[in-house]
Length: 630
Image 1 (cartoon, rainbow, N blue to C red):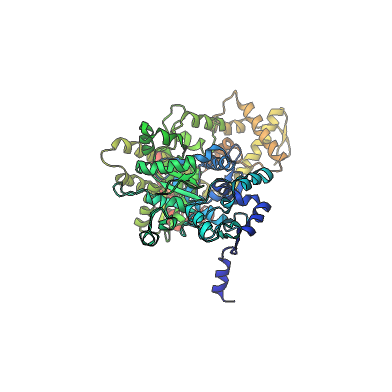
Image 2 (image 1 turned 90 degrees about the vertical axis):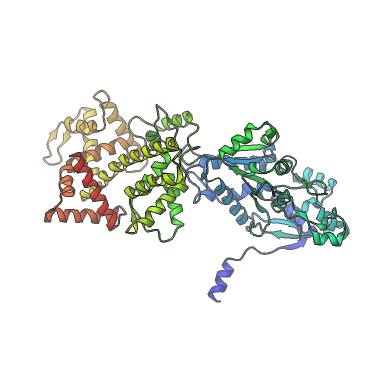
């Protein structure tokens, strides 16, 4: 077998199926899912792709979105719940699902993922879809059944059939198959947006030339000459977006900008599940209507009382920007991965860019300022803060994520920084500089009030980067940081346990029984602000955590407890401060300092993801910081 043929066979779709309604009907009796509607088909498609738990107290993550959309799991869960409700025949299936959010908040990406998921699902055995052969709306074959047969099917098998034949199929049944429904040809169909089958997209055009035929099709002038009358089914092209999307999904881009005629055509389809086409009676259609628009356009829509009927047929889901730091980094990683030859991105570069974007998306709050939300929303709880505080902050700031900088602006700035760099590498300082310059392209001179807080956010991110840079270099100066940190933790835990028990402990060197060193315990606790009154409670809480890890068969490490990790890092870094300052800040290092610097560079490259250029840039930057602070 040739290599090309092997590739083609691997890419081949499912086996074709051609038969008659007489052969198809027993298949429905054996597998009632063949009779499911569009919402049920889409819901099953999403579920078939798999689910997985993400974190405690968060909804399951649907695998179909896992590699494309980050940080808005609650929104995705709500969308899928709508499909679930609609799949059970509840009235929500008679609504237009409207996604509203700021530009770049993944609204269109969500719908694109669903379209690709539906396409793939109809290529599987579980997602097989059958239609009357050559029907322009890929009609459900069960529409051939007369009313008595439908009643019996519902009564005996629980299968409900809704809808009537389209004009073309009704005409063909009478003239081509002589009314014999058993002989009507049935094919298996595969949904394809490119093939205009089961999936369609409608985008508004110039209002002056916008025509409802884009949705419902139009007269076929050539066929009209043959058949003579406009009301003849074969003289009409049923090729509008709503005809194409029957039994599947139709995306409506910025549909609130469309003419009233078009909006009410969609209203009729949503509520009555029927399409009004030309000179024909209402045509049955079953499809998921997914629309999206920006918030400003939606507010204008809501403010106009003439739109009340449309509003009542719309189910609104707000799609904010992502609010979690780590997820924002994943968004940029995905977008940069789609580019070619973009060079090296130094550690913490994407974190810096993500922090800046996120700070712009948070509402101002006295209790929970943006810099605090940045960590709380990402599950980084320090000091007295716990998950409950993150929940409270979110409840107090319902507008978080509905404003601010979009990922597009950040990626534009990072791309410019990568291209402009003399070397194929960009670091956090380069990124922050590019983000500041990007304001000239995204914020006009008449919006200084908008630009000023964004500039202030860059200063806030710079402080976070300074802390990270100092810690990273300090770790690199310690040949075995993890071992040193773990050893310090063990010493603290042994002494804390002995202190709580008011017991002595054996000296690991001399073997003598000695009292626990309270000065050592307090020296670590003072670094993280543990007061005298709370020392006992802090030690007890830490030992409870240790016991919990042991019970679960897990190792308790120095970074298992955020406050303990902070204390240990501060202690180790403080011991090295003088050495680091002398080594990094000196203009003319001696041989010993050169050797130490080279070892540090090697560790940064081998263990932290740096390249030769950005490791050198980091050391220069840390030298500048230490020199500035004296």
